[in-house]
Amino acid sequence: MQRPVLVGEYECTLDAKKRIAIPARLRPAFSEGIYITHGHEGCLAGFTPEGFAAFLEEQMRGLSPRSSKARALRRFTAGTATFEQLDGQGRVTLPSRLLDFAGITREVTVVGVQDQIEIWDRASWAEYLARLEEEADATADELASQ
Image (cartoon, rainbow, N blue to C red; front, side, top):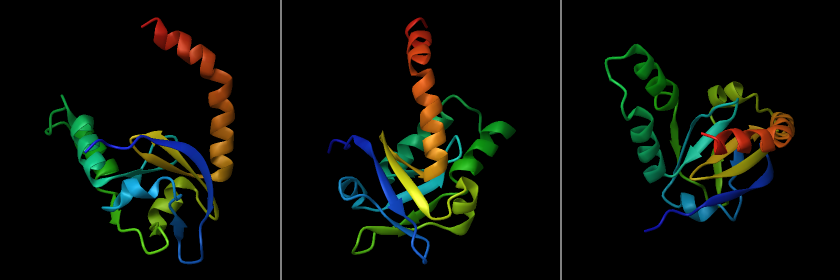
């Protein structure tokens, strides 16, 4: 089965039980559950079970398991991950430790990023997106010349 391409930006609200509703357009990808872990740039990352296994494999490719930095990277990603099933309304519970890491309190933006989703504090996403938009052309030029 072909993996769905996850795209789009969706505003959500964290409820009193620390749950967010995965946007309806993205839910089918997570019918088998979702792994949520530390992301980069201060967000959380959400993967399908198949996608998480592939991500971990790719992340460690070429790294020695005896390397302290490789072990730290595995702990940062796999050691902090949680696996959740979506409830009947498509919601998942986010652990406090992950919410604290991402600075998420109530207002959330979920972003589809091709093979995963990112879960951001809404204000942090807006700030990051503004920087990203300012630097987009320069980044594209830099990557094109490599």
